[in-house]
Length: 63
Image (cartoon, rainbow, N blue to C red; front, side):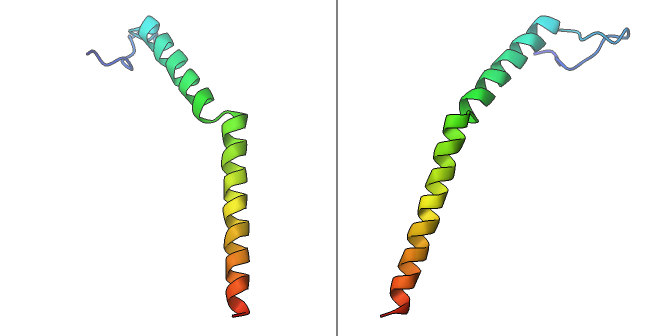
């Protein structure tokens, strides 16, 4: 496969169609992995684990 990042001497990309396709694919993957819904769910899970961990450690203090 040719190096898609290779530029022509005039500064244009050697494979603009392929680069556009790569850009669209990368954008779609980013939006899928880092959407607001995904980030919100991950953040809530972190908070829940932190709260559970804190509650567990407090219970052990009184035993």
